[in-house]
Amino acid sequence: MALAGVRVLELAGLAPAPFCGMILADFGAKVIRVDKTNTTYSTDTMARGKRSIALNLKSPEGVGVLKTLCKQSDVLIEPFRHGVMEGLGLGPEVILKENPQLVYARLTGFGQSGKYAKSAGHDINYISISGLLSRLGKNNENPAFPLNLLADFAGGSYICALGIVMSLFERTRSGKGQVIDSSMVEGAAYLGSFVWKSQSLGLWSRPRGENLLDGGAPFYTTYMTADGKYMAVGALEPQFYKELLKGLDLESSDLPNQMSFSDWPEMKKQFAEKFLEKTQEQWCQIFDGTDACVTPVLSFDNVTMHEHNRQRGSFLWDDEGEVSPRPAPLLSRTPAAPSSSRDPFIGEHTYEVLTEYGFNVKEISALQSSGVITCNNPKSQL
Ligand SMILES: CCCCCCCCCCCC[C@H](C)C(=O)SCCNC(=O)CCNC(=O)[C@H](O)C(C)(C)COP(=O)(O)OP(=O)(O)OC[C@H]1O[C@@H](n2cnc3c(N)ncnc32)[C@H](O)[C@@H]1OP(=O)(O)O
Image (tube, rainbow, N blue to C red; front, side, top):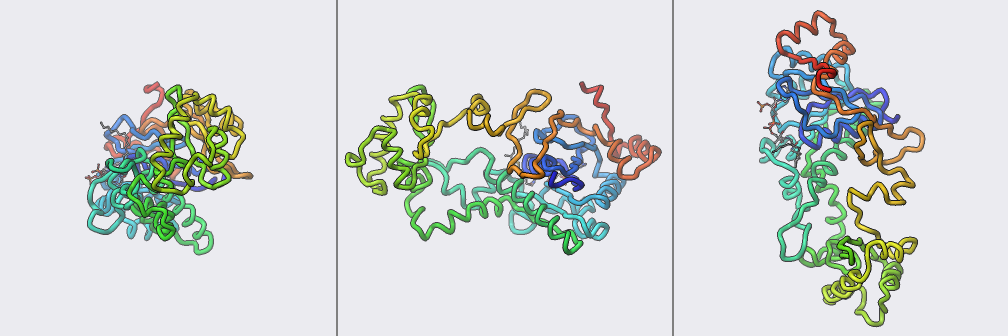
C-alpha cells in the first residue's frame, strides 16, 4: 500500500482527526490512536485499521511515554484547540527538537492563531467563518449546511491528510519534518476557491438560491418523483439540456431560453410537474444511458444495490456486516486495503504498542500500576 511503513500517532478527538487517521490507515499507514485512560467508550466511529493505547497525558510519565512514541514515529495528529499541546509540554518546539523528522499535524477549527484560536467550535461555525455557509441554501431561507461534511471532513480531514502526505514527500528530499497548521475554516474556504474565483463570470451575482449552481436553475436541482423519491438534474451544457428536455418530453420551442434567469422559477414549476408524473424507477429507465445528466437520489438503503456502484465495488462490508464507502481514490498499483476487523477497544493495544516501541515488561507494569496507562483485555469486552 502507498503509505506502508509510515507510523502515525493520532491523539483521540472528535470527527475530523479520526477520519484523517483512517484515511492514512486505509492506505497502509500504521495508525495508533492515543486515548485517555479514564474513558471506556470511544466515540471514534472511524477507527478502521487503527490500534488504541490508553495513556494519561496529564501525568509527566504519560507525557514522557508520548515523547518516546513521537521519537519513533513519522506523523503526529493532534486535534485540540490551540495551546493544549503546549500546556501539556508537548508543543511542536519540544517534540520536533527530539525528532526533527516528525510531521506534526495540528488539525483545528480556527487554526493556531487569530482571535478564535482558543475558542470552542464545530463544523457549522467553521463554515460560517469561511464565508461558504452564506452561499448555501434556498432563497429567503436561513443558510443550509451539508451535514458536517464541509469543514470537518473535506476542509479538515482531507486537507490535513493532503498536508501530511505532501510533508512526507518533501521530507524524502530535505530529511526534515514540519508543522502543519490545518484550520478547518481555511480548508473549507480553500475548497470554495471555485466560488471565489468564478465570481467574475457572474455565476453568483444573484441572491442565495437563485444562481446557476445553488438550486436556482431548473436544470441544476432536484425534483420529486411520483413515488416520493427524488431525481438529481445537472444538465448544464446546452447539448445535455436538450437531452433533458427530450427525456421529459418537453419542446424547447415551448420554453423560454435555458439561461433566462427571470423565467427560471416558472420553468422549475413545469419541470417539477413533469417529474411528478413518473416514479424514480421509470425516470431511470428513461435517462440511464443518455447524456441528460439525470440520476436517482439514492438513499443509504439502496445505494449499495445500485448497478453502477455494484459494478465498481464502491462500497465494502466489514467482518461485522457494517457497510461503508471504499477508500478513494483507486490507486492502480498500490490501492488501499482497508481492514475489515472490528474497531479497537480503548487501550486494547497498549501493551503491544509499548513493547513494540521499546518499553520492557517491568516499565509497562510500573506505568500500569501508577495509572499512567491502561491495558484492556479485549476478551473481557466481547
Ligand atoms: C449528546 C452528545 C454526544 C456526543 C457524541 C459525539 C458523537 C460524535 C459527533 C461528532 C460531531 C462532530 C462535530 C459536528 C464537529 O464539528 S467535530 C470538530 C470539533 N472541532 C475540532 O476538532 C477543532 C479542534 N478542537 C477543538 O476546538 C476542541 O478540542 C473542541 C472540539 C472544541 C473540544 O474542546 P474540549 O473538550 O474543551 O477539548 P480541548 O480544549 O481541545 O482539550 C482537550 C483536553 O483533553 C485533554 N486530553 C487529551 N488527551 C488526553 C489524554 N490522553 N490524557 C489526558 N488528558 C487528555 C487535554 O489535555 C485537554 O485538557 P484541558 O486543557 O481541557 O485541561
